[in-house]
Image 1: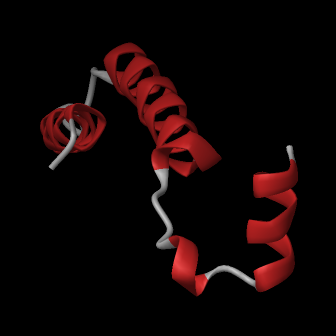
Image 2: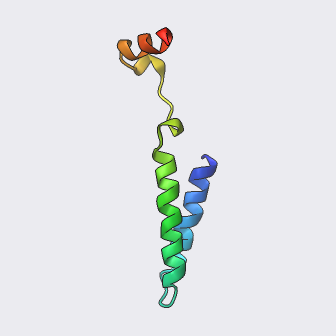
Amino acid sequence: MTSLEEALAGILKSIEEATEPGNSLALAALMQRRYAICAALAAPEQSWHDPSEQPASTVAQRKAA
């Protein structure tokens, strides 16, 4: 598990705890953090793809660059 995934797990746990009445500000802040971490995890640089699984044209373009 990456540090971003660990952070997301902690945020999700905190969101569960903050669902009690009266914690609307804390819940809103936690939701913003969750969205930011999910966006970071969805970024292309966070994924790893085996070069053999990519189309040949993509691999050829990278070698040419």
